[in-house]
Image (cartoon, rainbow, N blue to C red; front, side):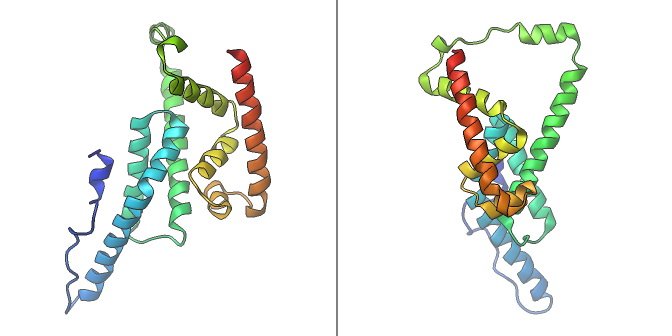
Length: 198
């Protein structure tokens, strides 16, 4: 079991019975939120993790960010009107913050330390299997896109609808289809360029 999956049980058997009597209403609401949270976590954690994993290219970081997304939902103490869009929005904000922090850390590296890091041997395509080569090509094509294009494509790949995507990215819902079509076309163009370069 991963650290993230330890956050919530895989079934509802550990949820205590709802007490009755004096103060039972508040406890009932708390138990109800917990049960709903557990169900939402089990249903949505893999989706949020995949989105973040594709954005970061770092499974450990993606897992940490996905877990933090659900911790923030739990701290909220209640579900938003559109939980899927809320989770995607928080996950993308956490990703942006993590990327900014990583950029600042890179800027603090000395030239010498940077040279040591970049002097490490890089595996050649001959050392990888076909799926790793394809993943690397897709990653390079995605990296060539704007942040919004990349996020549109990855949200759509995870099955988010236009309404959820517009809420998560702060876009007009009517423009999502056009922006998504452009992002797809740009990805195809960039992927073809990656193929031509190798």
